Length: 96
Image 1 (spheres, rainbow, N blue to C red):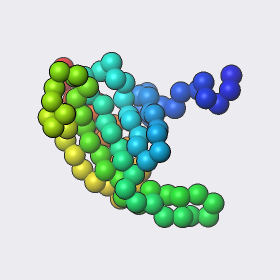
Image 2: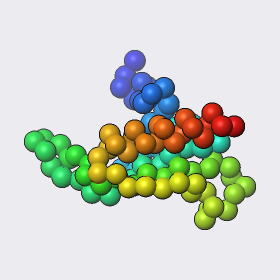
Image 3: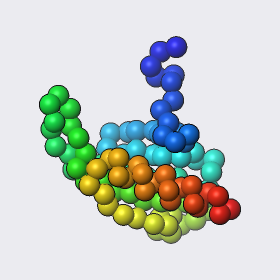
């Protein structure tokens, strides 16, 4: 199995990355979280996120684009952003 076939997950939910955008959750669920890396700094041989925007969004295609965002926040690390994203997603998906 090559590297591209192994899905990346965090706390049992899929992660998909495209450039500075990371989608957390499944599009088949009512909610997903969009993480956008706004700022990063070099650390040894890689860049580390220093500012990350977090948005809990509806996946319903019938909702207007301006009404998709349910919650938003900004965190100072990718770990903190993923941590709040997992809490938001778990709470909103279990409430349904």
